Image (cartoon, rainbow, N blue to C red; front, side, top):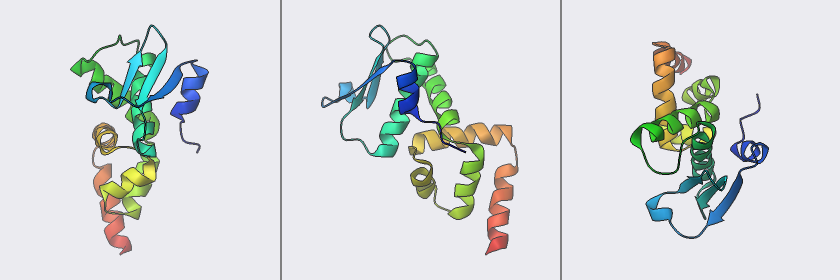
Length: 140
């Protein structure tokens, strides 16, 4: 299955993605709804940039105005996590390695979005997470 690509999504939506050298007041990315533009801090790791772009696209897709609001930030994280992290791919990463840091590398996401996805999928598939760990132990 092809992974969802936030760069392609931005192009489809005609949202400009610009890399900037300034730190955006401590943020790694920012959505400007009136300009239909997302700014990303230059020099981020690929998985960080991909995660930040997906998060900012979430603001665009969810119709969020500019500015920080904790509820909208959580909504954007959930939207981004569900698009970047496929449940089956997460299970494969868990079986391949016991290290969540490696899962981030394999899935090309930040630890924050990994945590959000795990919380979402745990709620949807209660108990399934434990089955994965049992299968890994049985394989050893």
